[in-house]
Each structure stands twice: as structure tokens, then as C-alpha cells.
Amino acid sequence: MDGEGADTTEPERSGGTPADQLAHLLARAGNGLAAARELGAVRSALMHHCGLQSCRHTKGPPRRMNRRTFRHSFLLPDGGVRLVWELEHDTDPDGRVRRQVFTRQEEVALAEWEVDLAFGGPHGPREVSCDPRAGAGRDPEQEDLDALLAAAAPENALRRTYTEGDSAEHARRLLRRAANAGAPGDEVRARLQGAIAHDISIVTRRSTLVHGRQVSWSLYEHAFLLLDGSELSLWEIDHTRTPSGDPVCEVYTSQDAALDTAVRRIEAG
Image 1 (cartoon, rainbow, N blue to C red):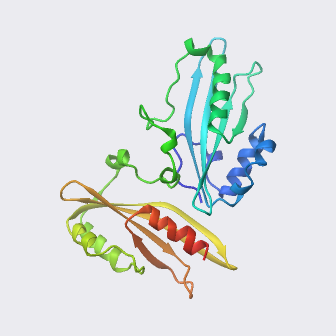
Image 2: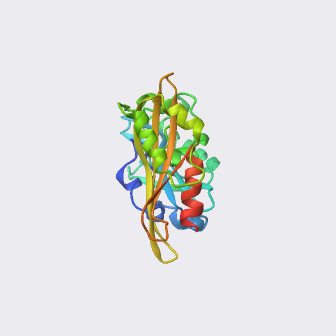
Image 3: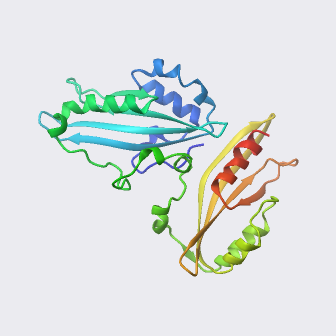
């Protein structure tokens, strides 16, 4: 199941299963057949995230040209993340849009440099950020598992739309229905008694066959604003991996722990 993509990601690069996204990615790339030989393991990926890494454009002369680089992240069953880069440009003399897939960062960097020569080299039109959230000094290598799941990073905290009222009660009900033995304890419960606002967002959901039976799970983030201005997030997994197939709720204090439950216990059995 896809995580939430960047604002600049088109529909063709979001939605569908990770296997579908990989197939579409390889099909539209000129070197897709060659790249497919290195990406066999990605077909079993559990999640997919795509974000626009960089771009360059000019209105001319001699004509309008564009270059965009997308970074695809695939979450594998063993918890690892496989990165694939997609380079798209229309800088060739015929103006046709061409796409290539790369599995190594140094290869896509070299390909970008070669494409960007059409813009006039280092003295040509300046490169601009195509993602309004991409601040100066951003290191794309840090976009790992957290980005894949579209987790709320610290720089996005102020973008939350908090709902005031009954936040402490919401936290109490959430923890009360938690069925897992490792649910947050007294310390977290005490802190949440001072919650003054909260925000609920779905991170991802997935449905899959486990031992011949359909099992589904959803991951939610419950973010709480506390009296001292700090934030505290709880991660809820709702799943149907129960003997009766009835849904059950589990709550964790970290996204990694919730994901571990979803991928390694609910899906892997």
C-alpha cells in the first residue's frame, strides 16, 4: 500500500500496489528491461512512496525544456528499503519525453549532469526546487522509512490541524481499547491527561492474504498537543489477524514498533 506521496507526485506515480508501481515504472522507462533484472526482489515490496527529488526547467531559448528526478522507495518484507530513481526529461533535439530508471545514486547523478548540459551547463538557467517543502540543506538520503510511511516529521509539526476539546478523553479511550501487552503504560497515560488538542491521521492501510485468509490492517497516528507546548504521538494498528477475524486495536509509542507489528507479525505470521 502506498504511503502518502509528495504534493508534486502525479497520479501515475501513486496509487495501486507496490508491484503495480514497479511494473509501471519499468514499462515507461527506456531502460526498464535492463533495470528489471536488478529489481526482482522489489516485486514483493509491502509499501511504495514516490517523491520529486529535484527538477530543472527553462522557457527557452531555444525552446521550453524540463528535467525531473523522482525518488521511489519500496519497503521490503525484511524491513529494508530499496531506492529506485526515475529521470524524466525532454531535452533531446526531438523534444520527446524520455525516462530512465537507476538503482544507484551515482548513476542518476551522472545522468542528471549529462541531461543538464542541454540547459547551458553551470552557467545556464538556475535549478529550482519543485517541492515547496524542500528546504535548503535537505539531505535526500535521510528520506528513509519515516518518509516512506509519510510520517509527520518535526518540520511538519506546525502544519497539523489540531482539534481542541476532549483530547485527554480521546487518549484515554484509545489506550483503553489497546489489546497488546506492550501498550503505553502509566507514564504516557499521565502525560496525556494534560492533552489540550489532538490530530488523527491515517498513515497507510493494506489488505493481503495470510495463510489463505484475507487480513487487513491500518496504521494511524494520534498526535496530542500538551499543556507545555510539546507533542506526543501514539501509533495505532487496527487489524483483523485474529482467530475470529474480528478487528482488534494495538497501540504503540513509536512508528517503528507499530510497523514491526504490521509487517513481521500480522503479515508474516
